[in-house]
Length: 173
Ligand SMILES: Nc1ncnc2c1ncn2[C@@H]1O[C@H](COP(=O)(O)OP(=O)(O)O)[C@@H](O)[C@H]1O
Ligand SMILES: O=C(O)C1=C[C@@H](OP(=O)(O)O)[C@@H](O)[C@H](O)C1
Ligand SMILES: [Mg+2]
Image 1 (cartoon, rainbow, N blue to C red):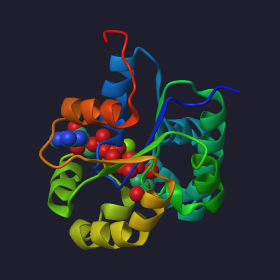
Image 2 (image 1 turned 120 degrees about the vertical axis):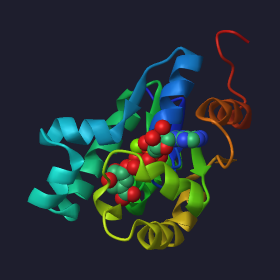
Image 3 (image 1 turned 90 degrees about the horizontal axis):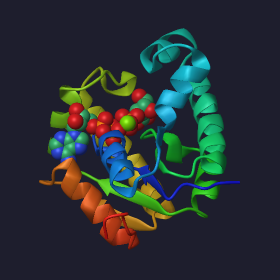
């Protein structure tokens, strides 16, 4: 069994996918994103999974994708924003180095507004994001080894803060 060097959790727009890629490059390790794994498993993009099979089916695929990646991927792993809602996922995250990327509402809404579609944020994204974050913040905190604030930081600066928070060395140190 190979376990990730870092797992990134946090709400949509916190930068998990973007920072994860930068972090993996800095560490000289691979990057994996469970949303991409789910799309590969289902053979279609996430919005289509939500439309065709519904959110509960997406969440089943997500639990499986996280379990498989957490047991086999030795690099940086980014989860989807809702992955922590599953108790089984939280249980396995308790054993891993997990960073919660925090972000204020205004920054997150600005970031996701310009990005790929997220089915849960299509209608009234501001209010929906706030609701999601209120429900999930305790869960992000429960699984987090460290919390990194992303407000006013570039993805590269966030990657630096993650390395520092976990005291990780890069090949250039
Ligand atoms: N620290 C940051 N500052 C500004 N924009 C960012 C930052 N992190 C991510 N972004 C941008 O926000 C959008 C969402 O980022 P993404 O990595 O997909 O977030 P997540 O995976 O957490 O939902 C992307 O367009 C990305 O380029
Ligand atoms: O918050 C959520 O429930 C979701 C977040 C998305 O990932 P990001 O957090 O990477 O945007 C993706 O997994 C799906 O649209 C559901
Ligand atoms: Mg993402």
